[in-house]
Image (cartoon, rainbow, N blue to C red):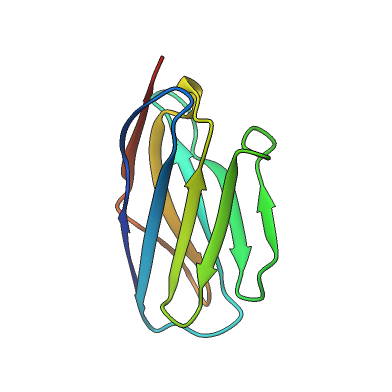
Length: 114
């Protein structure tokens, strides 16, 4: 089992920044992938960004150049730095862990006002 705890969501004006953090605990082995997904009301959950334990990253086209994903393997943490936020970034953001199984955090609300 892997447990994920997120923090860092909140309300911000358009153009502002937020940093999300996620801490993983439990049976964590190397070779995993951690990432962030988001789900807005009425929409499906979508990938925002992912990062492998080796540091390979991928991003949704909608956030490229604005969001940066990083991780600290020693602390089992993954971060999402979100800059130049737009109202369309408003969603619940979920931390995701892919190892022997897939795990999800409880989600953190990000609201961007115009």
